[in-house]
Amino acid sequence: MYDDVVRLVPVLATTAFFLALPLISVPGREVATVRTPTPIFLTARAALAQSTYEFEFGSLECEGDCARHEAGFRWAARRRLTHPDQCEGSTRSFIQGCRAFLIAVRERERTVQDN
Image 1 (cartoon, rainbow, N blue to C red):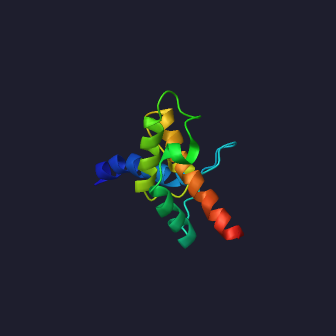
Image 2: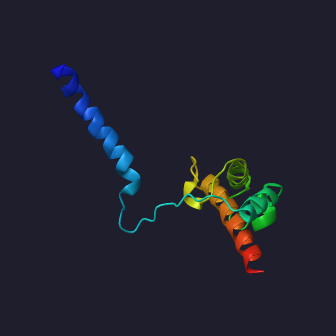
Image 3: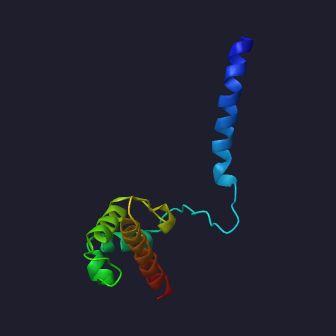
């Protein structure tokens, strides 16, 4: 039994560390706040999901064609993301497209709330 406990201690310590990670703040780094989407947010997301990256933002930010930006934009439209910091991907362009979608959704949400 002693051997089982000795083997279990590092596992428990590692698990406790990873459970505490979201609570650890790193200076200069904001933690993405996952929030419950409002009905206005959901409506704005549904409306933008029918659009395209190029229609919303033009091709100024794209390097070459906008295929990777568009892929990130589409990916974000299919996910239940609420904050641009939740975007991930293998290329900078893909992540920019994802972030652009969520930023546009938030801007539409704010516009509706302000009116």
